[in-house]
Amino acid sequence: MKTTFHCIPCHVNHIYRVISGLPFDDTLKLTILQEVLPYIIRNYQAPPDCAYEMYRIVRERTGIKDPFDKIKKQSNERMMALVPDLRKLLSAGGTLQKALQIALVANIIDYGIGGNAYYDDYADTFRNLVEDCMIPDEFYTHFVQSVNSSQKILYIADNAGEIVADKLLVECLPKDKVIFAVRGGPVINDATIEDAHSIGLDTVVPVITTGDQTPGINLARCSKDFLYELSQADMVILKGQGNFEAMIDASLEGIAKKGLKMFFLFKVKCLPVADFTHKKIGDSAFMLREL
Figure 1 (cartoon, one colour):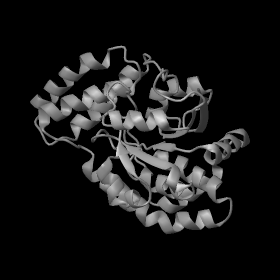
Figure 2 (cartoon, rainbow, N blue to C red; figure 1 turned 120 degrees about the vertical axis):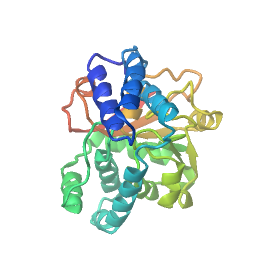
Figure 3 (cartoon, one colour; figure 1 turned 90 degrees about the vertical axis):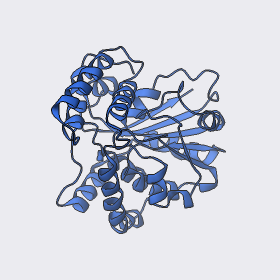
Figure 4 (cartoon, one colour; figure 1 turned 90 degrees about the horizontal axis):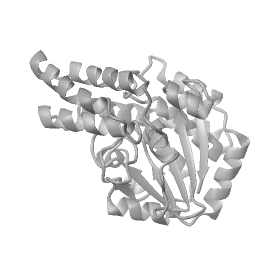
């Protein structure tokens, strides 16, 4: 997806919130914001590429590698505490379908849009959202068929905390087929290799990184290892709006197999994506792209 004029105020508001929470004086915060602004107005291939530049500048000017470190740990811990309740939902029937619903609903854990996914009734909120999350029959049929026919499945994660739900979905897949990918370094509250290790995901399936700190996929910056796994995959599961924005219309000629099926699961969080998908902000999105 191309950047639109809606993205500019969104990026400005986002980096303003991040800078405001940093333990530095206003002079440095002003300097960072002034340096970031020219990058925000550029015409990027996809919106996540702007976030890559913003967080690069924040790291270089402050020395803080991960402004969301504490929040990410809290997200992982809170979701791990919710696992017994989530397993009860799975045991109620339709395990794979329910796991897909849980994995998508967990995409609400996103601090890139300024929201706070924590509620006093966290478990009840999750349960209600899962019950309201309907998977289109055609999507689910294609998903099951692809799982059964694929030799290799690449699962590309989004946020910390959310990966606990991803782990539950992975456990419902043929694990010998799955390679799980996280970000190559901290950016927003996206999951990294440390997050995957902290919840034991690496004990279930092999975990790699994209080799890049974009909160999405930038194929030009991804590592050779990640690109190799992508080239070998028959099926890709992509979580989150950032991965959707970057990969729904990215050129994959010479990179991925012909016939590759890409399954996107995310919550719609902004107007450009709502318009692109013909959905409303807040809707659940199950999208399929086939090469």
